[in-house]
Image (tube, rainbow, N blue to C red; front, side):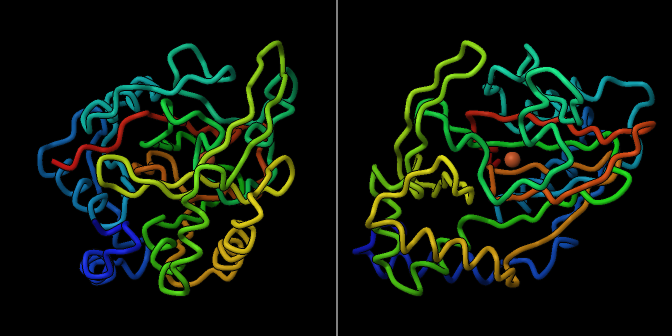
Length: 287
Ligand SMILES: [Fe+2]
């Protein structure tokens, strides 16, 4: 068991395999595809190969069908990889796939995702209860911003390795059930109870991570505070495990909910930035 702190040998084998296949830059993860609604077997396998390597792949469409509905295209892409259980939040459209664009007014306009402001490091759905944890994520770009809006990306497995190599106690502190608590909130008639949980945990033998770098409205267990500070330092330092990419029209990220940011952007109101986001309770199928 690689993630058992007592199993040094098992962890060592997993770590070495992981590090030996680590990509040097984001370009290695790019897979050219014709149309995400009609992937060839070779295209699908090429995407899976990158996901097996570092939990994420970037696709670049070269021949998307004109005038198609991008939201349905994203749903079709997800199904191809076993992503079917969509996470529905109260701001998502009914079908669970959310258009991300600047909202000038309405309930969305009060949330950072619907502004031009940057979003700090996180995994999606860190406030979800365990039963509806977000495991798979697709971000599809229909129209990039006039300027900015890059994503920084990091495979959580590599962050785990960095921490465990420094001190296994950091991992132990982050794996306890009370490590990170999101206080409850009341909003638009929706009540969300306080949600405590570990930062690192396993699901079917795979490592998973629940994290936000935001400091407001987050309570860290006293034993996990030092480890949380260490995570912030690692992410801020921007080492070789962190990639930065800017999605262009017809590009997208297919991933097992890796750590990511969204950098600040500025919109051209005539051609506003539009991304579709699909969150799933499933992981990407390996084969
Ligand atoms: Fe996100």
